[in-house]
Length: 118
Image 1: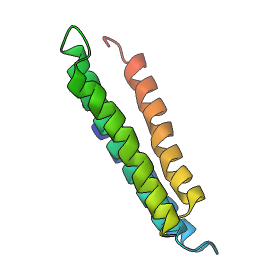
Image 2: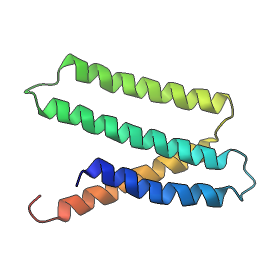
Image 3: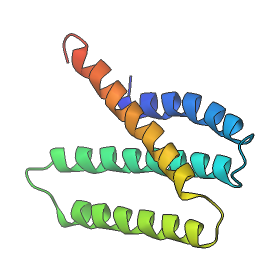
């Protein structure tokens, strides 16, 4: 199976209950922040996988892939800064969402590395 799909599916199984549970905490916009942070993390992982596949398919990193890597980072910073500035999300919520996706990347990577024949 595709590791990025595994990461997205497993992260969704953790992010949705975490957002529901955080709705009962006194922080406003925390559930939305968790979901947005998770979504941005998943999109970032998918874009990173696409970039790596493009680089590995060639003998060198082409300009399009290098530009896309910088563009992806700049867009991530702009989106996070804009949402935080407008107070639509909380920074702890975004960090929680990113952390869930990051942990799923580690767990899925370890599972795929331990699988025989990989």
